[in-house]
Image (cartoon, rainbow over all chains, first blue to last red):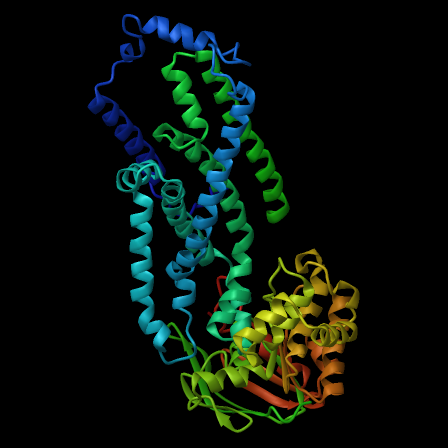
Amino acid sequence: MAATALPESRRVSGRGLVLAALALAALCAWLALDAPLTGLVPREGGWDVARGFFGHALRPAFTYETEVPDGTSPLLLSGLAAARRTVVFAVAGMSLALVLGVLLGFLASSSWWAQDSGGRKGLRQRLGPLVWGSARVLIVGMRSVHELLWAVLFLAAFGLNTFGAVVAISIPYGGTLAKIFSEMLEEAPRDSARALRELGAGPLQIFLFGQLPRAVPDMAAYTFYRFECSVRSSAVLGFFGFPTLGYSITQAFENLHYAEVWTYLYMLMALVVGIELWSGALRRRFVA
Amino acid sequence: MSSAAGFRLARASVWFAGRAALAGVDLEVRPGESLALVGPSGSGKTTLLRLLNAAVLPSSGEVSIDGRSLAQASPGELRELRAHVGFVHQDLCLVPNVRVLANVLAGRLGQQGLAASLRSQLFPPREEIERAAAILERVGILEKLYQRTDSLSGGQRQRVALARALYQEPRALLADEPVSAVDPARARNLVELLAEVSRERGLTLVVSLHDIALAREFFPRLVGLRAGAVVFDKATGEVGQAEIERLYSLEGLELDDDGRDGTA
Protein backbone atom coordinates (compact mmCIF):
# COMPACT_ATOMS: atom_id res chain seq x y z
CA MET A 1 0.00 0.00 0.00
CA ALA A 2 1.43 3.37 -0.94
CA ALA A 3 1.95 5.90 1.83
CA THR A 4 -0.55 8.73 1.82
CA ALA A 5 0.97 11.90 0.43
CA LEU A 6 0.80 14.45 3.25
CA PRO A 7 -0.07 18.07 2.55
CA GLU A 8 3.10 20.14 2.30
CA SER A 9 4.51 21.51 5.54
CA ARG A 10 7.19 24.10 6.05
CA ARG A 11 10.60 22.53 6.77
CA VAL A 12 11.94 25.06 9.28
CA SER A 13 9.24 25.66 11.85
CA GLY A 14 8.64 29.31 12.72
CA ARG A 15 8.12 28.35 16.34
CA GLY A 16 11.69 27.05 16.71
CA LEU A 17 13.13 30.25 15.26
CA VAL A 18 11.13 32.45 17.63
CA LEU A 19 12.22 30.41 20.66
CA ALA A 20 15.88 30.58 19.62
CA ALA A 21 15.65 34.35 19.11
CA LEU A 22 14.07 34.83 22.55
CA ALA A 23 16.77 32.75 24.24
CA LEU A 24 19.46 34.73 22.42
CA ALA A 25 17.91 38.03 23.51
CA ALA A 26 17.85 36.92 27.14
CA LEU A 27 21.49 35.82 26.97
CA CYS A 28 22.54 39.14 25.40
CA ALA A 29 20.76 41.08 28.14
CA TRP A 30 22.62 39.23 30.90
CA LEU A 31 25.95 39.64 29.14
CA ALA A 32 25.31 43.34 28.61
CA LEU A 33 24.44 43.84 32.28
CA ASP A 34 27.71 42.29 33.40
CA ALA A 35 26.09 41.22 36.67
CA PRO A 36 28.14 38.45 38.28
CA LEU A 37 26.43 36.19 40.78
CA THR A 38 28.98 37.31 43.37
CA GLY A 39 26.94 40.54 43.59
CA LEU A 40 24.55 38.61 45.79
CA VAL A 41 27.21 38.01 48.42
CA PRO A 42 26.83 40.77 51.04
CA ARG A 43 29.66 43.19 51.58
CA GLU A 44 31.51 43.53 54.86
CA GLY A 45 29.05 44.35 57.62
CA GLY A 46 26.27 43.48 55.26
CA TRP A 47 26.16 40.04 56.76
CA ASP A 48 25.04 41.47 60.07
CA VAL A 49 22.26 43.46 58.51
CA ALA A 50 21.13 40.47 56.45
CA ARG A 51 21.27 38.17 59.45
CA GLY A 52 19.46 40.69 61.64
CA PHE A 53 16.76 41.26 59.08
CA PHE A 54 16.06 37.72 57.94
CA GLY A 55 16.58 36.39 61.45
CA HIS A 56 13.42 38.22 62.50
CA ALA A 57 11.27 36.74 59.73
CA LEU A 58 9.88 34.14 62.11
CA ARG A 59 9.85 36.51 65.09
CA PRO A 60 7.76 39.52 64.10
CA ALA A 61 7.11 42.08 66.80
CA PHE A 62 3.81 42.36 68.66
CA THR A 63 4.87 45.41 70.67
CA TYR A 64 7.28 48.25 69.89
CA GLU A 65 10.91 47.28 70.18
CA THR A 66 11.86 50.43 72.12
CA GLU A 67 10.18 52.86 74.47
CA VAL A 68 7.57 55.00 72.76
CA PRO A 69 6.00 58.22 74.05
CA ASP A 70 2.87 57.82 76.14
CA GLY A 71 -0.32 57.85 74.14
CA THR A 72 1.20 56.10 71.11
CA SER A 73 -1.29 53.47 69.95
CA PRO A 74 -0.10 49.86 70.26
CA LEU A 75 1.97 48.45 67.40
CA LEU A 76 -0.69 46.14 66.05
CA LEU A 77 -3.35 48.84 66.14
CA SER A 78 -1.19 51.38 64.36
CA GLY A 79 -0.33 48.68 61.82
CA LEU A 80 -4.02 48.03 61.23
CA ALA A 81 -4.66 51.75 60.87
CA ALA A 82 -1.87 51.98 58.27
CA ALA A 83 -3.35 48.95 56.47
CA ARG A 84 -6.75 50.66 56.45
CA ARG A 85 -5.23 53.85 55.00
CA THR A 86 -3.46 51.71 52.38
CA VAL A 87 -6.81 50.36 51.24
CA VAL A 88 -8.46 53.79 51.38
CA PHE A 89 -5.77 55.29 49.11
CA ALA A 90 -6.18 52.34 46.72
CA VAL A 91 -9.98 52.59 46.63
CA ALA A 92 -9.89 56.34 46.05
CA GLY A 93 -7.27 55.95 43.31
CA MET A 94 -9.12 53.12 41.63
CA SER A 95 -12.49 54.90 41.68
CA LEU A 96 -11.00 57.79 39.76
CA ALA A 97 -9.07 55.38 37.52
CA LEU A 98 -12.26 53.49 36.72
CA VAL A 99 -14.02 56.65 35.54
CA LEU A 100 -11.01 57.56 33.40
CA GLY A 101 -10.71 53.99 32.14
CA VAL A 102 -14.33 53.66 31.08
CA LEU A 103 -14.43 57.07 29.37
CA LEU A 104 -11.10 56.75 27.56
CA GLY A 105 -11.64 53.06 26.87
CA PHE A 106 -14.89 53.92 25.12
CA LEU A 107 -13.26 56.74 23.14
CA ALA A 108 -10.27 54.61 22.18
CA SER A 109 -12.33 51.65 21.05
CA SER A 110 -12.97 51.56 17.33
CA SER A 111 -16.07 49.43 17.85
CA TRP A 112 -18.13 52.59 18.24
CA TRP A 113 -16.35 54.93 15.86
CA ALA A 114 -16.16 52.46 13.01
CA GLN A 115 -19.78 51.32 13.10
CA ASP A 116 -21.32 51.98 9.74
CA SER A 117 -24.75 53.50 9.67
CA GLY A 118 -25.58 52.14 6.25
CA GLY A 119 -23.71 53.52 3.29
CA ARG A 120 -22.81 57.16 3.78
CA LYS A 121 -20.22 58.38 6.25
CA GLY A 122 -21.65 60.49 9.04
CA LEU A 123 -19.98 63.02 11.32
CA ARG A 124 -19.07 60.22 13.71
CA GLN A 125 -17.07 58.24 11.17
CA ARG A 126 -15.31 61.37 9.94
CA LEU A 127 -14.44 62.63 13.43
CA GLY A 128 -13.72 59.12 14.67
CA PRO A 129 -10.06 58.68 13.76
CA LEU A 130 -9.18 62.05 15.31
CA VAL A 131 -10.86 61.46 18.71
CA TRP A 132 -9.88 57.83 18.75
CA GLY A 133 -6.25 58.59 17.85
CA SER A 134 -5.90 61.33 20.46
CA ALA A 135 -7.48 59.12 23.13
CA ARG A 136 -4.89 56.46 22.36
CA VAL A 137 -2.01 58.93 22.55
CA LEU A 138 -3.33 60.18 25.90
CA ILE A 139 -3.59 56.62 27.19
CA VAL A 140 -0.01 55.84 26.19
CA GLY A 141 1.16 58.99 27.98
CA MET A 142 -0.69 58.08 31.16
CA ARG A 143 0.57 54.51 31.15
CA SER A 144 4.17 55.07 30.26
CA VAL A 145 4.93 56.96 33.49
CA HIS A 146 4.84 54.71 36.57
CA GLU A 147 2.68 55.68 39.56
CA LEU A 148 5.77 56.19 41.72
CA LEU A 149 7.16 58.63 39.20
CA TRP A 150 3.83 60.47 39.11
CA ALA A 151 3.96 60.54 42.93
CA VAL A 152 7.45 62.07 42.85
CA LEU A 153 6.30 64.69 40.34
CA PHE A 154 3.23 65.62 42.42
CA LEU A 155 5.33 65.59 45.58
CA ALA A 156 7.71 68.09 44.01
CA ALA A 157 4.85 70.25 42.74
CA PHE A 158 2.34 70.16 45.63
CA GLY A 159 4.22 68.75 48.59
CA LEU A 160 2.89 65.90 50.69
CA ASN A 161 -0.67 66.16 49.39
CA THR A 162 -3.13 63.31 49.80
CA PHE A 163 -4.99 64.21 46.65
CA GLY A 164 -1.71 64.18 44.75
CA ALA A 165 -1.03 60.62 45.92
CA VAL A 166 -4.49 59.48 44.82
CA VAL A 167 -4.11 61.11 41.43
CA ALA A 168 -0.65 59.56 41.09
CA ILE A 169 -2.31 56.16 41.34
CA SER A 170 -5.30 56.95 39.18
CA ILE A 171 -3.43 58.32 36.17
CA PRO A 172 -1.40 55.23 35.21
CA TYR A 173 -4.13 52.88 36.42
CA GLY A 174 -6.75 54.80 34.45
CA GLY A 175 -4.55 54.54 31.36
CA THR A 176 -4.05 50.80 31.78
CA LEU A 177 -7.75 50.20 32.39
CA ALA A 178 -8.61 52.29 29.32
CA LYS A 179 -6.21 50.34 27.11
CA ILE A 180 -7.44 46.95 28.28
CA PHE A 181 -11.11 48.04 28.27
CA SER A 182 -10.87 49.27 24.69
CA GLU A 183 -9.32 45.96 23.63
CA MET A 184 -11.98 43.98 25.46
CA LEU A 185 -14.71 46.05 23.83
CA GLU A 186 -13.19 45.38 20.45
CA GLU A 187 -12.70 41.68 20.99
CA ALA A 188 -16.15 41.03 22.42
CA PRO A 189 -18.39 39.08 20.02
CA ARG A 190 -20.20 41.36 17.59
CA ASP A 191 -23.21 39.21 16.80
CA SER A 192 -25.61 40.84 19.24
CA ALA A 193 -24.48 44.29 18.12
CA ARG A 194 -25.20 43.27 14.54
CA ALA A 195 -28.66 42.06 15.49
CA LEU A 196 -29.46 45.38 17.17
CA ARG A 197 -28.24 47.27 14.13
CA GLU A 198 -30.57 45.17 12.01
CA LEU A 199 -33.57 46.05 14.09
CA GLY A 200 -32.90 49.73 13.64
CA ALA A 201 -30.95 50.66 16.79
CA GLY A 202 -28.70 53.73 16.64
CA PRO A 203 -24.91 53.63 17.09
CA LEU A 204 -24.89 54.53 20.77
CA GLN A 205 -27.70 52.07 21.55
CA ILE A 206 -25.85 49.34 19.67
CA PHE A 207 -22.73 50.07 21.67
CA LEU A 208 -24.45 50.29 25.06
CA PHE A 209 -26.81 47.34 24.76
CA GLY A 210 -25.16 45.08 22.18
CA GLN A 211 -21.40 45.52 22.58
CA LEU A 212 -20.75 46.72 26.13
CA PRO A 213 -22.64 43.91 27.96
CA ARG A 214 -20.54 41.33 26.14
CA ALA A 215 -17.34 42.88 27.55
CA VAL A 216 -18.54 43.73 31.06
CA PRO A 217 -17.65 40.41 32.78
CA ASP A 218 -14.06 40.60 31.52
CA MET A 219 -13.85 44.30 32.35
CA ALA A 220 -15.04 43.66 35.92
CA ALA A 221 -12.61 40.78 36.43
CA TYR A 222 -9.72 42.88 35.19
CA THR A 223 -10.73 45.80 37.42
CA PHE A 224 -10.59 43.53 40.47
CA TYR A 225 -7.13 42.38 39.47
CA ARG A 226 -5.96 45.96 39.07
CA PHE A 227 -7.44 46.83 42.45
CA GLU A 228 -5.14 44.22 43.97
CA CYS A 229 -2.18 45.87 42.23
CA SER A 230 -3.27 49.30 43.41
CA VAL A 231 -3.13 48.17 47.04
CA ARG A 232 0.54 47.29 46.56
CA SER A 233 1.17 50.61 44.83
CA SER A 234 -0.57 52.45 47.60
CA ALA A 235 1.63 50.70 50.18
CA VAL A 236 4.76 51.65 48.26
CA LEU A 237 3.63 55.30 48.14
CA GLY A 238 4.36 55.25 51.87
CA PHE A 239 8.07 55.33 51.02
CA PHE A 240 7.49 58.98 50.07
CA GLY A 241 5.83 59.78 53.36
CA PHE A 242 2.18 59.08 52.68
CA PRO A 243 0.77 57.36 55.80
CA THR A 244 0.28 53.89 54.28
CA LEU A 245 1.97 50.62 55.28
CA GLY A 246 5.05 51.55 53.28
CA TYR A 247 5.61 54.51 55.60
CA SER A 248 5.51 52.27 58.67
CA ILE A 249 7.92 49.89 56.98
CA THR A 250 10.50 52.56 56.13
CA GLN A 251 10.26 54.07 59.60
CA ALA A 252 10.87 50.74 61.30
CA PHE A 253 13.62 49.90 58.84
CA GLU A 254 15.45 53.16 59.42
CA ASN A 255 15.34 52.53 63.17
CA LEU A 256 16.69 49.02 62.57
CA HIS A 257 13.53 47.58 64.15
CA TYR A 258 13.53 44.53 61.93
CA ALA A 259 10.92 42.65 63.93
CA GLU A 260 8.50 45.56 63.39
CA VAL A 261 9.33 45.58 59.67
CA TRP A 262 8.25 41.97 59.48
CA THR A 263 5.03 42.71 61.33
CA TYR A 264 4.11 45.31 58.75
CA LEU A 265 5.25 43.13 55.86
CA TYR A 266 3.05 40.28 57.06
CA MET A 267 0.14 42.69 57.35
CA LEU A 268 0.68 43.82 53.77
CA MET A 269 0.83 40.20 52.61
CA ALA A 270 -2.34 39.35 54.50
CA LEU A 271 -4.03 42.35 52.93
CA VAL A 272 -3.05 41.37 49.40
CA VAL A 273 -3.96 37.72 49.92
CA GLY A 274 -7.30 38.71 51.46
CA ILE A 275 -8.15 40.97 48.55
CA GLU A 276 -7.10 38.30 46.10
CA LEU A 277 -9.39 35.74 47.73
CA TRP A 278 -12.28 38.20 47.78
CA SER A 279 -11.79 39.40 44.20
CA GLY A 280 -11.33 35.81 43.06
CA ALA A 281 -14.70 34.91 44.51
CA LEU A 282 -16.32 37.94 42.84
CA ARG A 283 -14.58 37.16 39.55
CA ARG A 284 -15.95 33.63 39.53
CA ARG A 285 -19.44 35.00 40.06
CA PHE A 286 -19.07 37.50 37.23
CA VAL A 287 -17.42 35.37 34.61
CA ALA A 288 -19.14 32.04 35.23
CA MET B 1 -50.70 45.76 13.95
CA SER B 2 -49.28 45.02 10.56
CA SER B 3 -49.93 47.56 7.89
CA ALA B 4 -48.18 46.13 4.86
CA ALA B 5 -44.49 45.08 4.54
CA GLY B 6 -44.50 43.97 1.00
CA PHE B 7 -41.17 43.53 -0.74
CA ARG B 8 -40.12 43.97 -4.33
CA LEU B 9 -36.75 43.01 -5.80
CA ALA B 10 -35.97 43.87 -9.40
CA ARG B 11 -32.73 42.53 -10.91
CA ALA B 12 -31.18 42.80 -7.45
CA SER B 13 -27.55 41.71 -7.13
CA VAL B 14 -25.27 41.70 -4.10
CA TRP B 15 -21.50 41.35 -4.40
CA PHE B 16 -19.20 40.38 -1.55
CA ALA B 17 -15.47 40.56 -2.18
CA GLY B 18 -15.76 40.14 -5.92
CA ARG B 19 -18.23 37.27 -5.71
CA ALA B 20 -21.92 37.53 -6.46
CA ALA B 21 -23.96 36.29 -3.50
CA LEU B 22 -27.10 37.21 -5.39
CA ALA B 23 -27.25 37.74 -9.13
CA GLY B 24 -30.18 39.53 -10.70
CA VAL B 25 -32.98 38.34 -8.44
CA ASP B 26 -36.59 39.30 -9.18
CA LEU B 27 -39.02 38.67 -6.38
CA GLU B 28 -42.31 40.07 -5.22
CA VAL B 29 -43.66 39.36 -1.74
CA ARG B 30 -47.16 40.63 -1.00
CA PRO B 31 -48.10 41.88 2.49
CA GLY B 32 -49.29 39.04 4.71
CA GLU B 33 -47.95 36.35 2.41
CA SER B 34 -45.78 33.54 3.71
CA LEU B 35 -43.09 31.76 1.74
CA ALA B 36 -40.04 29.59 2.24
CA LEU B 37 -36.65 30.06 0.60
CA VAL B 38 -35.07 26.72 -0.19
CA GLY B 39 -31.75 25.82 -1.73
CA PRO B 40 -28.31 24.45 -0.93
CA SER B 41 -25.71 26.11 1.32
CA GLY B 42 -24.22 29.19 -0.24
CA SER B 43 -27.14 29.70 -2.60
CA GLY B 44 -27.80 33.21 -1.28
CA LYS B 45 -30.73 32.61 1.06
CA THR B 46 -29.21 34.58 3.94
CA THR B 47 -28.19 37.43 1.67
CA LEU B 48 -31.70 37.61 0.24
CA LEU B 49 -33.18 37.78 3.74
CA ARG B 50 -30.69 40.49 4.69
CA LEU B 51 -31.78 42.50 1.66
CA LEU B 52 -35.40 42.24 2.80
CA ASN B 53 -34.31 43.59 6.18
CA ALA B 54 -32.33 46.46 4.64
CA ALA B 55 -29.30 45.04 6.46
CA VAL B 56 -27.39 44.99 3.19
CA LEU B 57 -28.00 47.23 0.21
CA PRO B 58 -28.11 45.87 -3.34
CA SER B 59 -24.92 46.35 -5.35
CA SER B 60 -27.14 46.81 -8.37
CA GLY B 61 -30.82 46.56 -9.13
CA GLU B 62 -33.74 47.70 -7.03
CA VAL B 63 -35.05 46.64 -3.64
CA SER B 64 -38.07 48.30 -2.12
CA ILE B 65 -39.92 47.74 1.12
CA ASP B 66 -43.53 48.92 1.09
CA GLY B 67 -42.75 50.93 -1.97
CA ARG B 68 -39.73 52.70 -0.46
CA SER B 69 -36.54 52.10 -2.38
CA LEU B 70 -33.48 51.20 -0.30
CA ALA B 71 -31.13 52.99 -2.65
CA GLN B 72 -32.67 56.39 -1.90
CA ALA B 73 -33.19 55.88 1.82
CA SER B 74 -31.19 57.97 4.31
CA PRO B 75 -29.52 56.22 7.28
CA GLY B 76 -32.46 57.32 9.42
CA GLU B 77 -34.99 55.91 6.97
CA LEU B 78 -33.04 52.65 6.76
CA ARG B 79 -33.19 52.38 10.54
CA GLU B 80 -36.93 52.95 10.44
CA LEU B 81 -37.39 50.28 7.78
CA ARG B 82 -35.31 47.82 9.83
CA ALA B 83 -37.27 48.66 12.98
CA HIS B 84 -40.44 47.33 11.40
CA VAL B 85 -39.07 44.09 10.06
CA GLY B 86 -38.36 41.36 12.59
CA PHE B 87 -35.36 39.13 11.90
CA VAL B 88 -34.61 35.84 13.65
CA HIS B 89 -30.93 35.14 12.97
CA GLN B 90 -29.55 31.69 12.43
CA ASP B 91 -27.14 32.13 15.34
CA LEU B 92 -29.79 34.10 17.29
CA CYS B 93 -27.42 36.96 18.21
CA LEU B 94 -28.83 37.45 21.70
CA VAL B 95 -26.88 39.04 24.53
CA PRO B 96 -26.11 35.94 26.63
CA ASN B 97 -25.26 37.51 29.98
CA VAL B 98 -28.42 39.55 30.56
CA ARG B 99 -31.94 38.52 31.46
CA VAL B 100 -34.39 37.25 28.87
CA LEU B 101 -36.48 40.36 29.55
CA ALA B 102 -33.66 42.68 28.45
CA ASN B 103 -33.21 40.78 25.20
CA VAL B 104 -36.92 40.96 24.43
CA LEU B 105 -37.15 44.67 25.31
CA ALA B 106 -34.20 45.32 22.98
CA GLY B 107 -36.62 44.66 20.13
CA ARG B 108 -37.89 48.23 20.47
CA LEU B 109 -34.48 49.94 20.39
CA GLY B 110 -35.04 51.00 16.82
CA GLN B 111 -38.18 52.87 17.82
CA GLN B 112 -36.81 54.53 20.96
CA GLY B 113 -34.56 57.47 21.67
CA LEU B 114 -31.49 56.99 23.83
CA ALA B 115 -33.16 58.08 27.08
CA ALA B 116 -36.20 55.84 26.59
CA SER B 117 -34.01 52.89 25.69
CA LEU B 118 -31.79 53.38 28.75
CA ARG B 119 -34.93 53.39 30.87
CA SER B 120 -36.36 50.22 29.39
CA GLN B 121 -33.05 48.37 29.51
CA LEU B 122 -32.16 49.38 33.08
CA PHE B 123 -35.48 50.13 34.80
CA PRO B 124 -38.21 48.76 32.55
CA PRO B 125 -41.64 50.26 33.30
CA ARG B 126 -44.41 47.87 34.24
CA GLU B 127 -46.35 48.12 30.99
CA GLU B 128 -43.27 47.19 28.97
CA ILE B 129 -42.62 44.16 31.17
CA GLU B 130 -46.24 43.11 30.73
CA ARG B 131 -46.06 43.45 26.96
CA ALA B 132 -42.82 41.41 26.85
CA ALA B 133 -44.38 38.82 29.17
CA ALA B 134 -47.43 38.46 26.91
CA ILE B 135 -45.16 37.71 23.96
CA LEU B 136 -43.05 35.25 25.95
CA GLU B 137 -46.26 33.54 27.00
CA ARG B 138 -47.32 33.27 23.37
CA VAL B 139 -44.01 31.62 22.41
CA GLY B 140 -44.24 29.32 25.44
CA ILE B 141 -41.45 30.45 27.76
CA LEU B 142 -43.11 32.98 30.08
CA GLU B 143 -41.46 31.40 33.13
CA LYS B 144 -38.03 32.35 31.76
CA LEU B 145 -38.74 36.10 31.85
CA TYR B 146 -36.24 36.93 34.60
CA GLN B 147 -33.65 34.24 33.87
CA ARG B 148 -30.25 34.86 32.40
CA THR B 149 -30.41 34.16 28.68
CA ASP B 150 -27.39 31.87 28.65
CA SER B 151 -29.04 29.55 31.17
CA LEU B 152 -31.66 28.58 28.55
CA SER B 153 -31.55 25.65 26.15
CA GLY B 154 -31.01 26.15 22.42
CA GLY B 155 -34.70 25.78 21.65
CA GLN B 156 -35.67 28.23 24.39
CA ARG B 157 -33.14 30.79 23.19
CA GLN B 158 -34.62 30.43 19.72
CA ARG B 159 -37.95 31.48 21.20
CA VAL B 160 -36.32 34.46 22.93
CA ALA B 161 -34.98 35.58 19.56
CA LEU B 162 -38.47 35.19 18.10
CA ALA B 163 -39.95 37.12 21.04
CA ARG B 164 -37.48 39.95 20.48
CA ALA B 165 -38.54 40.13 16.84
CA LEU B 166 -42.24 40.08 17.76
CA TYR B 167 -41.70 42.78 20.40
CA GLN B 168 -40.71 45.06 17.53
CA GLU B 169 -44.37 44.83 16.45
CA PRO B 170 -43.06 44.21 12.96
CA ARG B 171 -44.97 44.18 9.70
CA ALA B 172 -42.93 41.26 8.45
CA LEU B 173 -41.01 38.44 10.07
CA LEU B 174 -37.87 36.97 8.53
CA ALA B 175 -36.17 33.86 9.86
CA ASP B 176 -32.86 32.45 8.70
CA GLU B 177 -32.62 28.66 9.09
CA PRO B 178 -34.57 28.79 12.35
CA VAL B 179 -34.24 25.05 12.89
CA SER B 180 -30.52 24.51 12.37
CA ALA B 181 -29.84 24.23 16.11
CA VAL B 182 -32.69 22.04 17.31
CA ASP B 183 -33.74 18.41 16.92
CA PRO B 184 -36.35 17.43 14.29
CA ALA B 185 -39.35 17.31 16.64
CA ARG B 186 -38.60 20.77 18.02
CA ALA B 187 -37.86 22.02 14.52
CA ARG B 188 -41.38 21.21 13.43
CA ASN B 189 -42.83 22.93 16.52
CA LEU B 190 -40.81 26.02 15.87
CA VAL B 191 -41.75 26.37 12.21
CA GLU B 192 -45.37 25.79 13.18
CA LEU B 193 -45.07 28.53 15.80
CA LEU B 194 -43.58 30.93 13.24
CA ALA B 195 -46.41 30.20 10.83
CA GLU B 196 -49.08 30.57 13.52
CA VAL B 197 -47.93 33.85 15.05
CA SER B 198 -47.51 35.32 11.59
CA ARG B 199 -51.03 34.32 10.66
CA GLU B 200 -52.48 35.65 13.95
CA ARG B 201 -50.79 38.98 13.50
CA GLY B 202 -51.13 39.20 9.77
CA LEU B 203 -47.36 39.36 9.27
CA THR B 204 -45.54 38.69 6.07
CA LEU B 205 -43.34 35.65 6.74
CA VAL B 206 -40.21 34.72 4.83
CA VAL B 207 -38.18 31.79 6.15
CA SER B 208 -35.12 30.10 4.75
CA LEU B 209 -35.16 26.35 5.30
CA HIS B 210 -32.93 23.42 4.47
CA ASP B 211 -35.69 21.00 5.27
CA ILE B 212 -37.91 20.61 2.20
CA ALA B 213 -40.51 18.55 4.06
CA LEU B 214 -41.04 21.33 6.60
CA ALA B 215 -41.15 23.93 3.88
CA ARG B 216 -43.79 21.95 2.00
CA GLU B 217 -45.87 21.39 5.11
CA PHE B 218 -46.13 24.98 6.32
CA PHE B 219 -45.63 27.27 3.34
CA PRO B 220 -47.92 27.80 0.39
CA ARG B 221 -45.14 29.22 -1.76
CA LEU B 222 -41.58 28.03 -2.35
CA VAL B 223 -38.73 30.01 -3.84
CA GLY B 224 -35.77 27.88 -4.94
CA LEU B 225 -32.35 29.57 -4.91
CA ARG B 226 -29.19 28.19 -6.42
CA ALA B 227 -25.89 29.98 -6.88
CA GLY B 228 -27.49 33.34 -6.14
CA ALA B 229 -30.31 33.04 -8.67
CA VAL B 230 -33.98 32.11 -8.41
CA VAL B 231 -34.53 28.79 -10.19
CA PHE B 232 -38.20 28.40 -9.32
CA ASP B 233 -40.86 30.45 -7.59
CA LYS B 234 -44.30 28.84 -7.40
CA ALA B 235 -47.09 27.42 -5.31
CA THR B 236 -45.84 24.55 -3.19
CA GLY B 237 -48.16 22.03 -4.85
CA GLU B 238 -46.62 22.76 -8.23
CA VAL B 239 -43.03 22.11 -7.19
CA GLY B 240 -42.11 18.63 -8.36
CA GLN B 241 -39.58 16.23 -6.90
CA ALA B 242 -37.38 16.51 -9.96
CA GLU B 243 -37.07 20.25 -9.45
CA ILE B 244 -36.04 19.77 -5.83
CA GLU B 245 -33.42 17.22 -6.83
CA ARG B 246 -32.02 19.54 -9.47
CA LEU B 247 -31.94 22.37 -6.92
CA TYR B 248 -29.81 20.37 -4.51
CA SER B 249 -27.64 18.48 -6.99
CA LEU B 250 -23.96 18.99 -6.18
CA GLU B 251 -23.06 19.24 -9.83
CA GLY B 252 -21.51 22.57 -10.65
CA LEU B 253 -21.53 23.86 -7.06
CA GLU B 254 -18.43 25.08 -5.29
CA LEU B 255 -17.77 23.60 -1.86
CA ASP B 256 -17.64 26.45 0.64
CA ASP B 257 -14.98 26.22 3.31
CA ASP B 258 -17.48 26.73 6.05
CA GLY B 259 -20.43 25.17 4.31
CA ARG B 260 -22.57 28.22 4.95
CA ASP B 261 -23.98 31.03 2.93
CA GLY B 262 -21.19 33.26 1.75
CA THR B 263 -22.28 36.32 3.66
CA ALA B 264 -20.11 38.67 5.60
